[in-house]
Length: 203
Image 1 (cartoon, rainbow, N blue to C red):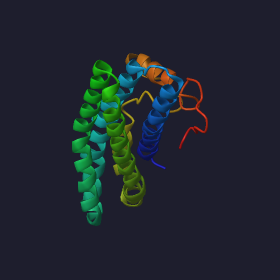
Image 2: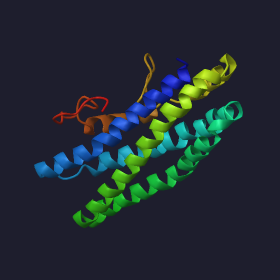
Image 3: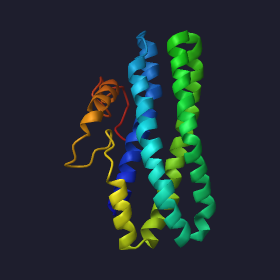
Image 4: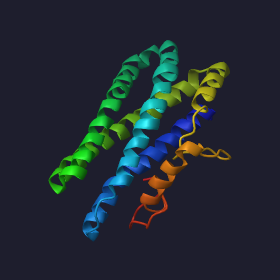
Protein backbone atom coordinates (compact mmCIF):
# COMPACT_ATOMS: atom_id res chain seq x y z
CA UNK A 1 0.00 0.00 0.00
CA UNK A 2 1.46 3.43 -0.89
CA UNK A 3 2.74 5.53 1.99
CA UNK A 4 0.28 8.34 1.23
CA UNK A 5 -2.67 5.93 1.54
CA UNK A 6 -1.35 4.58 4.84
CA UNK A 7 -0.98 8.12 6.16
CA UNK A 8 -4.49 9.11 5.07
CA UNK A 9 -5.95 6.02 6.76
CA UNK A 10 -3.97 6.63 9.95
CA UNK A 11 -4.99 10.29 10.13
CA UNK A 12 -8.62 9.36 9.45
CA UNK A 13 -8.50 6.74 12.21
CA UNK A 14 -7.06 9.17 14.77
CA UNK A 15 -9.60 11.89 13.98
CA UNK A 16 -12.57 9.50 13.83
CA UNK A 17 -11.65 7.98 17.18
CA UNK A 18 -11.43 11.41 18.81
CA UNK A 19 -14.69 12.69 17.31
CA UNK A 20 -16.60 9.53 18.24
CA UNK A 21 -15.27 9.62 21.79
CA UNK A 22 -16.06 13.24 22.58
CA UNK A 23 -19.83 12.76 23.15
CA UNK A 24 -19.13 9.71 25.35
CA UNK A 25 -16.63 11.72 27.37
CA UNK A 26 -19.03 14.64 27.81
CA UNK A 27 -21.84 12.27 28.86
CA UNK A 28 -19.59 10.51 31.38
CA UNK A 29 -18.52 13.85 32.88
CA UNK A 30 -22.12 15.00 33.16
CA UNK A 31 -23.18 11.72 34.80
CA UNK A 32 -20.34 12.00 37.29
CA UNK A 33 -21.20 15.63 38.03
CA UNK A 34 -17.75 16.70 36.85
CA UNK A 35 -17.28 20.05 35.11
CA UNK A 36 -16.36 19.97 31.42
CA UNK A 37 -12.65 20.20 30.67
CA UNK A 38 -12.89 23.24 28.41
CA UNK A 39 -9.13 23.48 27.95
CA UNK A 40 -9.04 19.94 26.57
CA UNK A 41 -12.05 20.58 24.33
CA UNK A 42 -10.41 23.71 22.95
CA UNK A 43 -7.22 21.75 22.30
CA UNK A 44 -9.13 19.06 20.39
CA UNK A 45 -10.92 21.57 18.18
CA UNK A 46 -7.68 23.46 17.58
CA UNK A 47 -6.08 20.18 16.48
CA UNK A 48 -8.90 19.56 13.97
CA UNK A 49 -8.48 23.05 12.57
CA UNK A 50 -4.68 22.92 12.52
CA UNK A 51 -4.12 19.49 10.97
CA UNK A 52 -7.08 17.80 9.23
CA UNK A 53 -8.62 21.03 7.96
CA UNK A 54 -5.52 23.03 7.00
CA UNK A 55 -3.02 20.32 5.99
CA UNK A 56 -4.73 17.01 5.28
CA UNK A 57 -7.60 18.46 3.23
CA UNK A 58 -5.35 20.91 1.40
CA UNK A 59 -3.13 18.10 0.10
CA UNK A 60 -6.13 16.04 -0.97
CA UNK A 61 -7.76 18.93 -2.83
CA UNK A 62 -4.58 20.27 -4.44
CA UNK A 63 -2.72 17.04 -5.24
CA UNK A 64 -4.74 13.84 -4.91
CA UNK A 65 -8.09 14.95 -6.33
CA UNK A 66 -6.87 16.81 -9.47
CA UNK A 67 -4.69 13.86 -10.46
CA UNK A 68 -7.58 11.46 -10.01
CA UNK A 69 -9.98 13.72 -11.94
CA UNK A 70 -7.67 13.45 -14.94
CA UNK A 71 -7.37 9.67 -14.78
CA UNK A 72 -10.89 8.73 -13.62
CA UNK A 73 -13.38 11.20 -15.17
CA UNK A 74 -16.34 9.20 -13.83
CA UNK A 75 -15.35 10.29 -10.30
CA UNK A 76 -15.48 14.01 -11.01
CA UNK A 77 -18.88 14.52 -9.39
CA UNK A 78 -17.78 12.66 -6.27
CA UNK A 79 -14.54 14.63 -6.14
CA UNK A 80 -16.44 17.88 -6.57
CA UNK A 81 -18.67 16.93 -3.61
CA UNK A 82 -15.64 16.15 -1.47
CA UNK A 83 -14.00 19.44 -2.45
CA UNK A 84 -17.15 21.28 -1.38
CA UNK A 85 -16.88 19.50 1.98
CA UNK A 86 -13.29 20.67 2.27
CA UNK A 87 -14.28 24.22 1.46
CA UNK A 88 -16.95 24.21 4.14
CA UNK A 89 -14.80 22.48 6.74
CA UNK A 90 -12.83 25.45 8.02
CA UNK A 91 -15.99 27.50 8.51
CA UNK A 92 -17.68 24.59 10.28
CA UNK A 93 -14.85 24.06 12.76
CA UNK A 94 -14.70 27.80 13.49
CA UNK A 95 -18.43 27.79 14.22
CA UNK A 96 -17.95 24.82 16.52
CA UNK A 97 -15.11 26.61 18.32
CA UNK A 98 -17.36 29.65 18.77
CA UNK A 99 -20.18 27.52 20.15
CA UNK A 100 -17.77 25.93 22.62
CA UNK A 101 -16.61 29.38 23.75
CA UNK A 102 -20.24 30.42 24.19
CA UNK A 103 -20.85 27.37 26.42
CA UNK A 104 -17.72 28.11 28.45
CA UNK A 105 -18.62 31.78 28.93
CA UNK A 106 -22.42 31.59 29.19
CA UNK A 107 -22.81 28.32 31.05
CA UNK A 108 -25.04 25.25 30.78
CA UNK A 109 -27.81 26.85 28.68
CA UNK A 110 -25.34 26.80 25.77
CA UNK A 111 -24.25 23.19 26.26
CA UNK A 112 -27.04 21.61 24.23
CA UNK A 113 -26.23 23.69 21.15
CA UNK A 114 -22.58 22.67 21.29
CA UNK A 115 -23.38 18.99 21.66
CA UNK A 116 -25.92 19.12 18.83
CA UNK A 117 -23.51 20.99 16.55
CA UNK A 118 -20.71 18.56 17.43
CA UNK A 119 -22.98 15.65 16.47
CA UNK A 120 -23.74 17.18 13.06
CA UNK A 121 -20.07 17.99 12.43
CA UNK A 122 -18.96 14.49 13.41
CA UNK A 123 -21.58 12.74 11.26
CA UNK A 124 -20.61 14.80 8.21
CA UNK A 125 -16.90 14.27 8.76
CA UNK A 126 -17.24 10.52 9.23
CA UNK A 127 -19.34 10.26 6.07
CA UNK A 128 -16.76 12.31 4.18
CA UNK A 129 -13.87 10.10 5.29
CA UNK A 130 -15.83 6.93 4.48
CA UNK A 131 -16.41 8.15 0.92
CA UNK A 132 -12.72 8.88 0.48
CA UNK A 133 -11.76 5.44 1.76
CA UNK A 134 -14.34 3.47 -0.23
CA UNK A 135 -14.65 5.49 -3.45
CA UNK A 136 -11.45 7.50 -3.89
CA UNK A 137 -8.45 5.66 -2.48
CA UNK A 138 -9.19 2.29 -4.15
CA UNK A 139 -9.46 3.96 -7.56
CA UNK A 140 -6.31 5.99 -6.95
CA UNK A 141 -4.47 2.80 -6.05
CA UNK A 142 -5.68 1.22 -9.28
CA UNK A 143 -4.84 4.03 -11.70
CA UNK A 144 -1.88 6.00 -10.31
CA UNK A 145 1.65 5.29 -11.48
CA UNK A 146 4.72 4.86 -9.32
CA UNK A 147 5.67 8.46 -10.16
CA UNK A 148 2.25 9.68 -9.03
CA UNK A 149 2.64 7.90 -5.71
CA UNK A 150 6.20 9.14 -5.23
CA UNK A 151 4.97 12.74 -5.36
CA UNK A 152 1.98 12.04 -3.11
CA UNK A 153 4.07 10.06 -0.63
CA UNK A 154 6.46 12.98 -0.31
CA UNK A 155 3.64 15.49 0.14
CA UNK A 156 1.66 13.55 2.72
CA UNK A 157 4.82 12.47 4.51
CA UNK A 158 6.06 16.04 4.91
CA UNK A 159 3.89 16.89 7.94
CA UNK A 160 3.69 15.12 11.26
CA UNK A 161 0.20 14.76 12.66
CA UNK A 162 0.61 14.72 16.48
CA UNK A 163 -2.22 12.20 16.92
CA UNK A 164 -1.08 9.89 14.10
CA UNK A 165 2.73 9.69 14.22
CA UNK A 166 4.27 7.05 11.98
CA UNK A 167 6.47 4.28 13.32
CA UNK A 168 9.89 5.65 14.13
CA UNK A 169 8.68 9.24 13.72
CA UNK A 170 8.88 11.68 16.61
CA UNK A 171 6.15 14.22 17.28
CA UNK A 172 7.04 17.77 16.28
CA UNK A 173 8.32 19.36 19.49
CA UNK A 174 6.12 22.42 18.98
CA UNK A 175 3.01 20.20 19.04
CA UNK A 176 4.08 17.87 21.86
CA UNK A 177 2.13 19.84 24.51
CA UNK A 178 -0.99 19.73 22.31
CA UNK A 179 -0.66 15.95 21.93
CA UNK A 180 -0.16 15.59 25.68
CA UNK A 181 -3.21 17.73 26.46
CA UNK A 182 -5.50 15.78 24.13
CA UNK A 183 -4.31 12.29 25.02
CA UNK A 184 -4.48 13.06 28.75
CA UNK A 185 -8.14 14.01 28.34
CA UNK A 186 -9.16 11.10 26.10
CA UNK A 187 -10.00 7.82 27.83
CA UNK A 188 -7.98 4.64 27.36
CA UNK A 189 -7.36 2.93 25.00
CA UNK A 190 -7.54 6.02 22.75
CA UNK A 191 -5.65 8.23 25.17
CA UNK A 192 -4.15 8.21 28.63
CA UNK A 193 -7.22 9.00 30.74
CA UNK A 194 -9.47 6.59 32.70
CA UNK A 195 -11.23 4.05 30.48
CA UNK A 196 -14.89 4.39 29.55
CA UNK A 197 -16.95 1.15 29.54
CA UNK A 198 -17.30 -0.39 26.09
CA UNK A 199 -14.87 1.99 24.38
CA UNK A 200 -12.60 0.43 21.77
CA UNK A 201 -9.53 1.90 20.11
CA UNK A 202 -11.10 1.97 16.64
CA UNK A 203 -14.91 2.12 16.85
